[in-house]
Image (cartoon, rainbow, N blue to C red; front, side, top):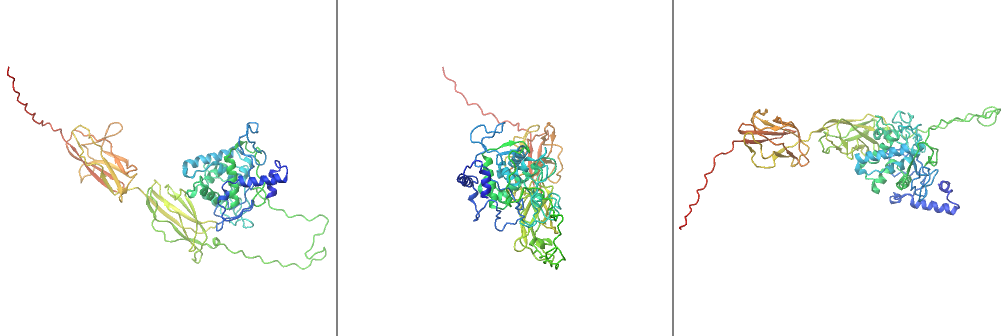
Length: 579
């Protein structure tokens, strides 16, 4: 890697001593925060060092190779002018490591940031982080080789993850994305493996498709992926955890942090596919760039020369060597799973807005019914409700424990009521799963009370001075967003709508004696519109009913005004003055 640094820096380093100084400065200044969490490991650029105990298939890329080129020492500020040269200040390094980002790719990063700022504001995702990851994963989609919609002109594929120097991840997409029906490969500008894209994929350009080869889709998916688990990327812990979840290597973390800091100092747009800011040249596996690898062709024997025979010489063949036995690969825990079994999950029901008290528990088993530990189980929510797992995601992946059990994150009900389904699957293997049906019920109240004890009275043809206000509670707590209706009824036994007596008015001033679509506010309060009286007198009843059947009946009294005047006090006798 020292030679690699020398290659990148020799334009500005006149001597070996200068180059060495530049490398030292780069190491000290280009990875801010990278040394703040070293996981008790030494790091060497270009070497992929996974976090102990992490599953290789538990991240976005399957720990695929990435570009290890680091940014230049010079700050990218200020941006070059139209002539592609800095206007003033610290010069921008041009060539292999310049700060330009292809226009369409840069637009995709910024649009993803804007969407996440709205949907997950607590994540604080900067677009520069997406740019840093896009740089090390694909060199910004091979230098912006994308069409007008943001789709790469040719697929960007990582190596086959067959366990030969890389992770072993068997095919999960039947080759639909990566062209391999035997093993998975990282795909697209942000290098998602198909099993991760299956749940993390997003439609970033609004064309109705989720395509890992489209930079808008891939950038938005990467943003959501980095923002899961309630990580706050404005802090070191959340930022480091998110990056390591993308590729589980300390060296990867250091490299991404270097580009993140570099891009935060400034960058600029360059034309798509213009060659400005070309694709990096050094990968963590010392391999070639992320391209489709051709099938190797065996060399042809030289012309006019006898083909060597086994045993040496060109005469009669020697003894045929025996073939060494092919070792039988040791099955992984995932390979032994035959099916998934429910592990004691009971009824899954919650009111809208509440967390489910019950969590889904699933066990991985062999064909003989033996539990399998250290297997990753994917839980996926489907249906019309807006229920999510804690953290706002529709998909969660959990490893089974020593008893073979995976406990899904808690479910959080949204505001949409109805049934939904949670399906389970073994990551990396086709095995019979378990489907769970869950229900979100409407918010209810078990108590309704008036907030005032002032009698509600009115004269015929008049207007009630006070509006009816009630408070709803459920098990002693405020019952907010509870649906309700209010009806002027005939009697306690006849709850049909009354055709006389007090009434409400609609927006056009017409008489209304039943109100629907009412809802308590955040404090559990419901304030009804003003009430009016017709010419009928007497005691009338207003019934308020909430979802769940809780009711409150309120009396309304209409009486003529009391016209009996009190006698005026007699005037005091006055004494006349004598003259």
